[in-house]
Image (cartoon, rainbow, N blue to C red):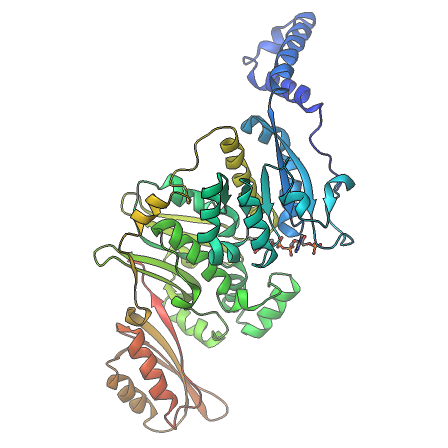
Length: 491
Ligand SMILES: NC(=O)c1ccc[n+]([C@@H]2O[C@H](COP(=O)([O-])OP(=O)(O)OC[C@H]3O[C@@H](n4cnc5c(N)ncnc54)[C@H](OP(=O)(O)O)[C@@H]3O)[C@@H](O)[C@H]2O)c1
Protein backbone atom coordinates (compact mmCIF):
# COMPACT_ATOMS: atom_id res chain seq x y z
CA UNK A 1 0.00 0.00 0.00
CA UNK A 2 1.40 3.37 -0.95
CA UNK A 3 0.32 6.47 0.90
CA UNK A 4 0.85 10.18 0.56
CA UNK A 5 1.12 12.84 3.21
CA UNK A 6 -1.28 15.72 3.74
CA UNK A 7 -1.45 17.63 0.48
CA UNK A 8 -2.62 21.01 -0.61
CA UNK A 9 -5.54 19.70 -2.71
CA UNK A 10 -7.23 18.36 0.39
CA UNK A 11 -9.02 21.54 1.40
CA UNK A 12 -10.80 21.79 -1.95
CA UNK A 13 -11.89 18.19 -1.74
CA UNK A 14 -13.17 18.71 1.76
CA UNK A 15 -15.10 21.78 0.69
CA UNK A 16 -16.97 19.74 -1.94
CA UNK A 17 -17.58 17.06 0.67
CA UNK A 18 -19.08 19.66 2.99
CA UNK A 19 -21.32 20.97 0.25
CA UNK A 20 -22.71 17.47 -0.39
CA UNK A 21 -23.34 16.94 3.30
CA UNK A 22 -24.94 20.22 4.24
CA UNK A 23 -27.01 21.05 1.18
CA UNK A 24 -30.71 21.17 2.17
CA UNK A 25 -32.37 17.85 1.39
CA UNK A 26 -33.45 17.62 -2.24
CA UNK A 27 -32.29 21.10 -3.18
CA UNK A 28 -29.73 19.92 -5.74
CA UNK A 29 -32.49 18.40 -7.90
CA UNK A 30 -34.13 21.80 -8.24
CA UNK A 31 -31.00 23.83 -9.01
CA UNK A 32 -30.29 24.90 -12.53
CA UNK A 33 -26.84 23.62 -13.60
CA UNK A 34 -25.60 27.25 -13.82
CA UNK A 35 -26.88 28.16 -10.32
CA UNK A 36 -25.55 24.92 -8.93
CA UNK A 37 -22.08 25.62 -10.43
CA UNK A 38 -22.20 29.13 -8.92
CA UNK A 39 -23.11 27.79 -5.45
CA UNK A 40 -20.46 25.08 -5.66
CA UNK A 41 -17.79 27.56 -6.74
CA UNK A 42 -18.70 30.10 -4.06
CA UNK A 43 -18.82 27.57 -1.25
CA UNK A 44 -15.69 25.83 -2.46
CA UNK A 45 -13.80 29.12 -2.46
CA UNK A 46 -15.17 30.12 0.94
CA UNK A 47 -14.42 26.79 2.52
CA UNK A 48 -11.03 26.53 0.80
CA UNK A 49 -10.08 29.84 2.34
CA UNK A 50 -11.29 28.89 5.81
CA UNK A 51 -9.80 25.37 5.64
CA UNK A 52 -6.44 26.69 4.53
CA UNK A 53 -6.28 28.45 7.91
CA UNK A 54 -6.45 25.12 9.70
CA UNK A 55 -3.48 24.49 11.90
CA UNK A 56 -1.14 21.75 10.75
CA UNK A 57 -0.37 19.38 13.62
CA UNK A 58 2.87 17.52 13.10
CA UNK A 59 3.19 13.97 14.38
CA UNK A 60 6.30 11.86 14.79
CA UNK A 61 6.13 8.08 15.12
CA UNK A 62 8.66 6.20 17.23
CA UNK A 63 8.31 2.64 15.94
CA UNK A 64 6.67 1.44 12.77
CA UNK A 65 5.74 -2.14 13.56
CA UNK A 66 2.25 -3.57 14.04
CA UNK A 67 0.79 -0.54 15.83
CA UNK A 68 2.85 2.19 14.15
CA UNK A 69 1.88 1.10 10.66
CA UNK A 70 -1.72 0.77 11.79
CA UNK A 71 -1.71 4.38 12.96
CA UNK A 72 -0.34 5.62 9.63
CA UNK A 73 -2.66 3.39 7.58
CA UNK A 74 -5.80 4.36 9.49
CA UNK A 75 -5.05 8.08 9.58
CA UNK A 76 -4.69 7.93 5.81
CA UNK A 77 -7.82 5.80 5.44
CA UNK A 78 -10.07 8.24 7.29
CA UNK A 79 -8.02 11.40 6.88
CA UNK A 80 -10.77 13.57 5.43
CA UNK A 81 -13.40 12.86 8.06
CA UNK A 82 -10.81 12.92 10.83
CA UNK A 83 -9.37 16.30 9.87
CA UNK A 84 -12.83 17.68 9.40
CA UNK A 85 -13.76 16.61 12.93
CA UNK A 86 -10.51 17.85 14.42
CA UNK A 87 -10.46 21.15 12.56
CA UNK A 88 -6.77 20.60 11.92
CA UNK A 89 -4.51 19.04 9.36
CA UNK A 90 -2.47 16.03 10.44
CA UNK A 91 1.00 15.64 9.05
CA UNK A 92 3.06 12.57 9.96
CA UNK A 93 6.35 14.36 9.69
CA UNK A 94 8.82 11.68 10.79
CA UNK A 95 8.88 7.94 11.35
CA UNK A 96 11.74 6.31 13.24
CA UNK A 97 12.47 2.58 13.19
CA UNK A 98 15.29 0.38 14.38
CA UNK A 99 16.11 -1.38 11.15
CA UNK A 100 15.59 0.50 7.89
CA UNK A 101 15.90 -2.66 5.78
CA UNK A 102 12.85 -4.37 7.38
CA UNK A 103 10.08 -4.83 4.82
CA UNK A 104 6.91 -2.89 5.77
CA UNK A 105 3.28 -3.25 4.79
CA UNK A 106 3.09 0.55 4.49
CA UNK A 107 5.50 2.57 2.35
CA UNK A 108 6.70 5.86 3.80
CA UNK A 109 8.24 8.69 1.77
CA UNK A 110 12.03 8.52 2.13
CA UNK A 111 12.34 12.02 3.58
CA UNK A 112 10.13 11.02 6.54
CA UNK A 113 11.87 7.77 7.33
CA UNK A 114 14.95 7.16 9.44
CA UNK A 115 16.57 5.01 12.09
CA UNK A 116 17.31 8.09 14.16
CA UNK A 117 14.69 8.64 16.91
CA UNK A 118 16.07 12.12 17.61
CA UNK A 119 14.54 13.21 14.29
CA UNK A 120 11.19 12.64 16.03
CA UNK A 121 11.93 13.50 19.64
CA UNK A 122 14.20 16.52 19.18
CA UNK A 123 12.46 17.89 16.11
CA UNK A 124 11.03 21.32 17.01
CA UNK A 125 8.35 20.88 14.33
CA UNK A 126 6.88 17.74 15.91
CA UNK A 127 3.94 18.51 18.21
CA UNK A 128 2.89 14.94 19.04
CA UNK A 129 5.26 12.02 19.56
CA UNK A 130 3.67 8.58 19.32
CA UNK A 131 5.79 6.02 21.13
CA UNK A 132 5.04 2.63 19.63
CA UNK A 133 8.42 0.94 20.08
CA UNK A 134 7.71 -0.97 23.25
CA UNK A 135 10.09 -1.84 26.09
CA UNK A 136 11.21 0.18 29.04
CA UNK A 137 14.78 1.04 28.03
CA UNK A 138 15.15 3.33 25.04
CA UNK A 139 11.41 4.06 25.04
CA UNK A 140 11.77 5.52 28.55
CA UNK A 141 14.69 7.75 27.61
CA UNK A 142 12.97 9.01 24.46
CA UNK A 143 9.67 9.62 26.24
CA UNK A 144 11.43 11.58 28.99
CA UNK A 145 13.26 13.64 26.37
CA UNK A 146 10.09 14.45 24.43
CA UNK A 147 8.13 15.37 27.57
CA UNK A 148 10.96 17.55 28.86
CA UNK A 149 10.61 19.58 25.68
CA UNK A 150 6.92 20.11 26.45
CA UNK A 151 5.73 17.81 23.70
CA UNK A 152 2.60 15.70 23.88
CA UNK A 153 3.40 11.99 23.93
CA UNK A 154 0.90 9.28 23.00
CA UNK A 155 1.83 5.73 23.95
CA UNK A 156 0.63 2.15 23.55
CA UNK A 157 3.35 0.90 25.90
CA UNK A 158 1.73 -0.61 29.02
CA UNK A 159 5.01 -1.82 30.50
CA UNK A 160 6.39 1.71 30.37
CA UNK A 161 3.27 3.37 31.82
CA UNK A 162 3.02 0.73 34.56
CA UNK A 163 6.66 0.94 35.61
CA UNK A 164 7.43 4.62 34.98
CA UNK A 165 4.05 6.37 34.66
CA UNK A 166 4.46 8.22 37.94
CA UNK A 167 7.69 9.85 36.78
CA UNK A 168 6.50 10.47 33.21
CA UNK A 169 3.23 12.18 34.24
CA UNK A 170 5.28 14.39 36.55
CA UNK A 171 7.67 15.39 33.76
CA UNK A 172 4.70 16.12 31.48
CA UNK A 173 3.13 18.27 34.19
CA UNK A 174 6.32 20.21 34.90
CA UNK A 175 7.01 20.97 31.26
CA UNK A 176 3.53 21.76 29.95
CA UNK A 177 3.14 18.67 27.78
CA UNK A 178 0.85 15.71 28.25
CA UNK A 179 1.12 11.91 28.33
CA UNK A 180 -1.77 9.99 26.74
CA UNK A 181 -2.03 6.20 27.10
CA UNK A 182 -5.45 4.90 25.97
CA UNK A 183 -3.90 2.15 23.82
CA UNK A 184 -1.88 0.80 26.72
CA UNK A 185 -4.91 -0.95 28.26
CA UNK A 186 -7.29 -3.30 26.42
CA UNK A 187 -6.30 -2.30 22.86
CA UNK A 188 -9.32 -0.87 21.08
CA UNK A 189 -11.61 -0.67 24.15
CA UNK A 190 -11.80 2.99 25.26
CA UNK A 191 -11.48 2.08 28.93
CA UNK A 192 -9.16 4.91 29.95
CA UNK A 193 -11.41 7.60 28.56
CA UNK A 194 -14.49 5.85 29.94
CA UNK A 195 -13.15 5.80 33.50
CA UNK A 196 -11.52 9.23 33.30
CA UNK A 197 -14.32 11.11 31.56
CA UNK A 198 -17.59 9.28 30.92
CA UNK A 199 -17.73 7.85 34.45
CA UNK A 200 -16.20 10.84 36.23
CA UNK A 201 -19.24 11.02 38.56
CA UNK A 202 -18.34 7.67 40.13
CA UNK A 203 -16.18 6.09 42.75
CA UNK A 204 -15.16 2.61 41.67
CA UNK A 205 -15.85 -0.26 44.01
CA UNK A 206 -14.89 -2.95 41.52
CA UNK A 207 -13.18 -3.07 38.15
CA UNK A 208 -12.43 -6.50 36.78
CA UNK A 209 -11.99 -8.21 33.49
CA UNK A 210 -9.96 -9.91 30.83
CA UNK A 211 -7.02 -7.78 29.72
CA UNK A 212 -4.88 -10.21 27.74
CA UNK A 213 -6.20 -11.55 24.45
CA UNK A 214 -3.56 -14.25 23.95
CA UNK A 215 -4.26 -16.06 27.22
CA UNK A 216 -7.99 -15.71 26.59
CA UNK A 217 -7.55 -17.27 23.15
CA UNK A 218 -5.66 -20.23 24.69
CA UNK A 219 -8.28 -20.77 27.43
CA UNK A 220 -11.14 -20.52 24.93
CA UNK A 221 -9.67 -23.16 22.65
CA UNK A 222 -8.83 -25.46 25.56
CA UNK A 223 -12.44 -25.21 26.68
CA UNK A 224 -14.13 -25.55 23.29
CA UNK A 225 -11.91 -28.21 21.77
CA UNK A 226 -10.66 -30.05 24.85
CA UNK A 227 -7.07 -29.29 23.78
CA UNK A 228 -4.11 -29.26 26.14
CA UNK A 229 -2.39 -26.02 27.14
CA UNK A 230 0.73 -27.00 25.14
CA UNK A 231 -1.20 -27.79 21.94
CA UNK A 232 -3.12 -24.52 22.05
CA UNK A 233 0.00 -22.53 22.86
CA UNK A 234 1.62 -24.00 19.73
CA UNK A 235 -1.27 -22.71 17.59
CA UNK A 236 -1.21 -19.31 19.30
CA UNK A 237 2.53 -19.05 18.53
CA UNK A 238 1.94 -19.95 14.87
CA UNK A 239 -0.76 -17.29 14.60
CA UNK A 240 1.69 -14.69 15.98
CA UNK A 241 -0.48 -14.07 19.05
CA UNK A 242 2.24 -14.69 21.62
CA UNK A 243 4.71 -11.92 22.55
CA UNK A 244 8.41 -12.62 21.95
CA UNK A 245 8.76 -12.63 25.73
CA UNK A 246 6.12 -15.31 26.38
CA UNK A 247 6.04 -14.65 30.11
CA UNK A 248 4.19 -11.40 29.38
CA UNK A 249 1.19 -13.36 28.10
CA UNK A 250 1.48 -16.69 29.90
CA UNK A 251 2.52 -15.52 33.37
CA UNK A 252 0.02 -12.69 33.51
CA UNK A 253 2.60 -9.89 33.45
CA UNK A 254 1.08 -8.03 30.50
CA UNK A 255 -2.39 -8.03 32.08
CA UNK A 256 -0.91 -7.10 35.46
CA UNK A 257 0.73 -4.03 33.86
CA UNK A 258 -2.71 -3.00 32.65
CA UNK A 259 -4.33 -3.69 36.04
CA UNK A 260 -1.76 -1.41 37.69
CA UNK A 261 -2.58 1.36 35.19
CA UNK A 262 -6.33 1.00 35.78
CA UNK A 263 -5.81 1.01 39.54
CA UNK A 264 -3.91 4.28 39.29
CA UNK A 265 -6.46 5.82 36.96
CA UNK A 266 -9.43 4.88 39.16
CA UNK A 267 -7.83 5.30 42.59
CA UNK A 268 -4.78 7.54 42.18
CA UNK A 269 -2.42 4.99 43.70
CA UNK A 270 0.61 3.52 41.95
CA UNK A 271 1.00 -0.10 42.92
CA UNK A 272 4.18 -2.09 42.25
CA UNK A 273 3.98 -5.37 40.37
CA UNK A 274 5.81 -7.22 43.14
CA UNK A 275 3.22 -6.07 45.70
CA UNK A 276 0.32 -7.83 44.01
CA UNK A 277 -0.78 -11.38 43.24
CA UNK A 278 0.25 -12.07 39.63
CA UNK A 279 -0.32 -15.60 38.35
CA UNK A 280 -0.61 -16.82 34.78
CA UNK A 281 -2.32 -19.66 32.96
CA UNK A 282 0.42 -22.30 32.71
CA UNK A 283 -1.01 -24.49 35.52
CA UNK A 284 -4.50 -24.75 34.07
CA UNK A 285 -5.27 -28.23 32.71
CA UNK A 286 -8.04 -29.48 30.46
CA UNK A 287 -9.41 -31.39 33.49
CA UNK A 288 -9.74 -28.15 35.46
CA UNK A 289 -11.64 -26.51 32.62
CA UNK A 290 -13.90 -29.55 32.19
CA UNK A 291 -14.74 -29.85 35.91
CA UNK A 292 -15.25 -26.10 36.19
CA UNK A 293 -17.63 -26.36 33.23
CA UNK A 294 -19.63 -29.14 34.93
CA UNK A 295 -19.94 -26.93 38.02
CA UNK A 296 -21.24 -23.97 35.98
CA UNK A 297 -17.98 -22.01 35.70
CA UNK A 298 -15.46 -20.96 33.09
CA UNK A 299 -11.80 -20.39 33.89
CA UNK A 300 -10.58 -16.92 32.84
CA UNK A 301 -7.44 -14.93 33.53
CA UNK A 302 -8.89 -12.02 35.49
CA UNK A 303 -7.55 -8.66 36.56
CA UNK A 304 -9.36 -7.52 39.72
CA UNK A 305 -9.18 -4.02 41.19
CA UNK A 306 -11.42 -3.84 44.25
CA UNK A 307 -11.71 -0.99 46.71
CA UNK A 308 -13.19 -1.24 50.16
CA UNK A 309 -14.15 2.40 50.81
CA UNK A 310 -14.95 1.84 54.48
CA UNK A 311 -11.61 0.27 55.34
CA UNK A 312 -9.91 2.43 52.65
CA UNK A 313 -8.10 -0.59 51.22
CA UNK A 314 -7.29 -1.36 47.62
CA UNK A 315 -6.83 -4.85 46.27
CA UNK A 316 -5.14 -5.25 42.87
CA UNK A 317 -4.52 -8.74 41.52
CA UNK A 318 -4.18 -10.79 38.39
CA UNK A 319 -4.85 -14.51 38.38
CA UNK A 320 -6.87 -17.27 36.74
CA UNK A 321 -10.25 -17.74 38.38
CA UNK A 322 -13.42 -19.73 38.04
CA UNK A 323 -16.23 -17.36 37.15
CA UNK A 324 -19.91 -18.29 36.81
CA UNK A 325 -20.92 -18.81 33.18
CA UNK A 326 -23.76 -16.34 33.63
CA UNK A 327 -21.40 -13.39 34.19
CA UNK A 328 -20.99 -11.23 31.08
CA UNK A 329 -17.19 -11.34 31.38
CA UNK A 330 -17.29 -15.17 31.36
CA UNK A 331 -18.74 -14.95 27.85
CA UNK A 332 -15.80 -12.90 26.54
CA UNK A 333 -13.91 -15.47 24.48
CA UNK A 334 -11.17 -15.79 21.89
CA UNK A 335 -8.79 -12.82 21.64
CA UNK A 336 -11.39 -10.39 22.97
CA UNK A 337 -10.96 -8.35 26.14
CA UNK A 338 -13.74 -7.27 28.47
CA UNK A 339 -13.79 -4.89 31.42
CA UNK A 340 -16.59 -4.63 33.97
CA UNK A 341 -16.66 -1.34 35.86
CA UNK A 342 -18.88 -0.89 38.89
CA UNK A 343 -19.34 2.73 39.93
CA UNK A 344 -21.38 3.94 42.87
CA UNK A 345 -23.50 6.13 40.60
CA UNK A 346 -23.73 4.32 37.28
CA UNK A 347 -23.87 0.72 38.57
CA UNK A 348 -22.13 -1.86 36.41
CA UNK A 349 -21.00 -1.11 32.87
CA UNK A 350 -19.24 -3.69 30.73
CA UNK A 351 -17.04 -2.91 27.75
CA UNK A 352 -16.03 -5.67 25.35
CA UNK A 353 -13.85 -5.44 22.28
CA UNK A 354 -10.60 -6.27 20.58
CA UNK A 355 -7.82 -6.05 23.13
CA UNK A 356 -4.97 -6.01 20.64
CA UNK A 357 -4.16 -6.10 16.95
CA UNK A 358 -3.18 -3.44 14.47
CA UNK A 359 -6.47 -1.77 13.75
CA UNK A 360 -8.03 -1.91 17.22
CA UNK A 361 -4.90 -0.60 18.91
CA UNK A 362 -4.35 2.12 16.35
CA UNK A 363 -7.97 3.22 16.87
CA UNK A 364 -7.06 4.03 20.48
CA UNK A 365 -3.78 5.72 19.52
CA UNK A 366 -5.64 7.90 17.02
CA UNK A 367 -8.24 8.74 19.67
CA UNK A 368 -5.40 10.04 21.86
CA UNK A 369 -3.94 11.93 18.90
CA UNK A 370 -7.37 13.55 18.48
CA UNK A 371 -7.45 14.62 22.15
CA UNK A 372 -3.91 15.93 21.78
CA UNK A 373 -4.92 17.92 18.70
CA UNK A 374 -7.84 19.51 20.58
CA UNK A 375 -5.51 20.30 23.48
CA UNK A 376 -2.90 21.84 21.20
CA UNK A 377 -5.65 24.03 19.78
CA UNK A 378 -6.55 25.35 23.22
CA UNK A 379 -9.12 22.89 24.57
CA UNK A 380 -8.80 22.20 28.30
CA UNK A 381 -6.86 19.10 29.35
CA UNK A 382 -8.91 15.91 29.91
CA UNK A 383 -11.17 15.79 32.97
CA UNK A 384 -9.11 14.50 35.91
CA UNK A 385 -5.87 14.90 34.07
CA UNK A 386 -3.32 12.38 35.28
CA UNK A 387 -1.00 15.30 35.78
CA UNK A 388 -3.34 16.84 38.30
CA UNK A 389 -1.50 15.73 41.38
CA UNK A 390 -4.02 17.25 43.78
CA UNK A 391 -6.95 15.32 42.36
CA UNK A 392 -5.00 12.12 42.46
CA UNK A 393 -3.71 12.73 45.96
CA UNK A 394 -7.31 13.18 47.08
CA UNK A 395 -8.42 10.00 45.36
CA UNK A 396 -5.67 8.07 47.11
CA UNK A 397 -5.89 9.87 50.45
CA UNK A 398 -5.00 7.34 53.16
CA UNK A 399 -5.58 4.48 50.74
CA UNK A 400 -3.62 1.36 51.62
CA UNK A 401 -2.94 -1.74 49.62
CA UNK A 402 -4.85 -4.70 51.09
CA UNK A 403 -2.68 -7.55 52.31
CA UNK A 404 -2.94 -10.23 49.58
CA UNK A 405 -2.78 -12.97 52.24
CA UNK A 406 -6.03 -11.65 53.75
CA UNK A 407 -7.99 -12.10 50.52
CA UNK A 408 -11.05 -14.25 51.23
CA UNK A 409 -13.23 -16.28 48.91
CA UNK A 410 -14.03 -19.76 47.68
CA UNK A 411 -11.41 -21.94 45.99
CA UNK A 412 -11.00 -24.81 43.56
CA UNK A 413 -8.32 -27.47 44.21
CA UNK A 414 -6.89 -30.17 41.96
CA UNK A 415 -4.97 -32.77 44.00
CA UNK A 416 -3.10 -35.62 42.31
CA UNK A 417 -3.08 -38.59 44.70
CA UNK A 418 -2.29 -42.28 44.93
CA UNK A 419 -5.57 -44.08 44.23
CA UNK A 420 -5.76 -45.95 47.53
CA UNK A 421 -8.30 -46.55 50.26
CA UNK A 422 -9.04 -43.68 52.62
CA UNK A 423 -7.23 -41.06 50.56
CA UNK A 424 -10.23 -38.75 50.34
CA UNK A 425 -10.68 -38.86 54.11
CA UNK A 426 -6.99 -37.97 54.54
CA UNK A 427 -7.32 -34.99 52.20
CA UNK A 428 -10.48 -33.89 53.98
CA UNK A 429 -8.73 -34.04 57.38
CA UNK A 430 -5.76 -32.01 56.18
CA UNK A 431 -8.04 -29.32 54.78
CA UNK A 432 -10.04 -29.30 58.01
CA UNK A 433 -6.83 -28.65 59.95
CA UNK A 434 -6.66 -25.37 58.02
CA UNK A 435 -10.36 -24.65 58.53
CA UNK A 436 -11.16 -25.38 54.89
CA UNK A 437 -14.32 -27.33 54.17
CA UNK A 438 -15.27 -28.50 50.74
CA UNK A 439 -18.49 -27.85 48.86
CA UNK A 440 -18.12 -30.25 45.90
CA UNK A 441 -15.80 -33.18 45.14
CA UNK A 442 -15.00 -34.96 41.87
CA UNK A 443 -12.63 -37.89 41.55
CA UNK A 444 -11.09 -39.17 38.35
CA UNK A 445 -9.07 -42.38 38.09
CA UNK A 446 -5.98 -42.26 35.91
CA UNK A 447 -4.52 -45.26 33.97
CA UNK A 448 -1.30 -45.27 36.05
CA UNK A 449 -3.08 -46.15 39.31
CA UNK A 450 -3.26 -42.60 40.57
CA UNK A 451 -6.28 -40.30 40.73
CA UNK A 452 -7.24 -36.66 40.53
CA UNK A 453 -9.40 -35.17 43.26
CA UNK A 454 -11.00 -31.93 42.19
CA UNK A 455 -12.91 -30.02 44.82
CA UNK A 456 -14.38 -26.63 45.52
CA UNK A 457 -14.37 -25.11 49.00
CA UNK A 458 -16.53 -22.88 51.12
CA UNK A 459 -15.12 -19.43 51.96
CA UNK A 460 -11.52 -19.49 53.10
CA UNK A 461 -8.52 -17.19 52.66
CA UNK A 462 -5.16 -17.05 50.90
CA UNK A 463 -3.11 -17.79 54.00
CA UNK A 464 -5.15 -20.92 54.84
CA UNK A 465 -5.02 -22.14 51.24
CA UNK A 466 -1.24 -21.66 51.03
CA UNK A 467 -0.74 -23.53 54.33
CA UNK A 468 -3.07 -26.36 53.23
CA UNK A 469 -1.22 -26.74 49.92
CA UNK A 470 2.14 -26.97 51.68
CA UNK A 471 0.70 -29.54 54.10
CA UNK A 472 -0.81 -31.60 51.25
CA UNK A 473 2.44 -31.50 49.25
CA UNK A 474 4.27 -33.07 52.19
CA UNK A 475 1.83 -36.03 52.39
CA UNK A 476 3.03 -39.31 50.91
CA UNK A 477 -0.35 -40.02 49.20
CA UNK A 478 -0.10 -36.75 47.28
CA UNK A 479 1.81 -37.33 44.03
CA UNK A 480 2.62 -33.71 43.12
CA UNK A 481 2.05 -30.22 44.50
CA UNK A 482 -1.70 -29.44 44.41
CA UNK A 483 -3.03 -26.75 42.13
CA UNK A 484 -5.64 -24.25 43.27
CA UNK A 485 -7.59 -21.45 41.64
CA UNK A 486 -9.78 -18.80 43.17
CA UNK A 487 -13.51 -18.68 42.48
CA UNK A 488 -14.34 -15.09 41.61
CA UNK A 489 -17.78 -13.84 42.65
CA UNK A 490 -18.20 -10.17 41.66
CA UNK A 491 -21.06 -9.27 43.96
N1 LIG B 1 0.61 -5.29 18.76
C1 LIG B 1 -0.46 -5.06 19.50
O1 LIG B 1 -1.55 -5.59 19.24
C2 LIG B 1 -0.40 -4.11 20.66
C3 LIG B 1 -1.58 -3.84 21.39
C4 LIG B 1 -1.54 -2.92 22.43
C5 LIG B 1 -0.34 -2.34 22.77
N2 LIG B 1 0.80 -2.65 22.07
C6 LIG B 1 2.03 -1.99 22.47
O2 LIG B 1 2.45 -1.16 21.41
C7 LIG B 1 3.86 -1.09 21.36
C8 LIG B 1 4.33 -1.50 19.97
O3 LIG B 1 3.90 -2.82 19.72
P1 LIG B 1 4.03 -3.47 18.26
O4 LIG B 1 3.26 -4.73 18.32
O5 LIG B 1 3.72 -2.48 17.22
O6 LIG B 1 5.58 -3.82 18.25
P2 LIG B 1 6.48 -4.15 16.97
O7 LIG B 1 5.64 -4.64 15.85
O8 LIG B 1 7.59 -5.01 17.47
O9 LIG B 1 7.06 -2.73 16.55
C9 LIG B 1 8.02 -2.05 17.30
C10 LIG B 1 8.61 -0.98 16.42
O10 LIG B 1 9.53 -0.22 17.18
C11 LIG B 1 10.71 -0.05 16.43
N3 LIG B 1 11.83 0.14 17.33
C12 LIG B 1 12.28 -0.69 18.29
N4 LIG B 1 13.35 -0.15 18.91
C13 LIG B 1 13.54 1.06 18.32
C14 LIG B 1 14.50 2.07 18.49
N5 LIG B 1 15.44 1.97 19.41
N6 LIG B 1 14.41 3.18 17.71
C15 LIG B 1 13.45 3.29 16.78
N7 LIG B 1 12.52 2.33 16.57
C16 LIG B 1 12.58 1.23 17.32
C17 LIG B 1 10.83 -1.32 15.62
O11 LIG B 1 11.67 -1.09 14.50
P3 LIG B 1 12.00 -2.28 13.43
O12 LIG B 1 10.68 -2.57 12.82
O13 LIG B 1 12.95 -1.67 12.50
O14 LIG B 1 12.53 -3.40 14.26
C18 LIG B 1 9.38 -1.53 15.22
O15 LIG B 1 9.08 -0.80 14.07
C19 LIG B 1 4.36 -1.99 22.49
O16 LIG B 1 4.58 -1.21 23.64
C20 LIG B 1 3.19 -2.92 22.72
O17 LIG B 1 3.15 -3.44 24.03
C21 LIG B 1 0.79 -3.51 21.03
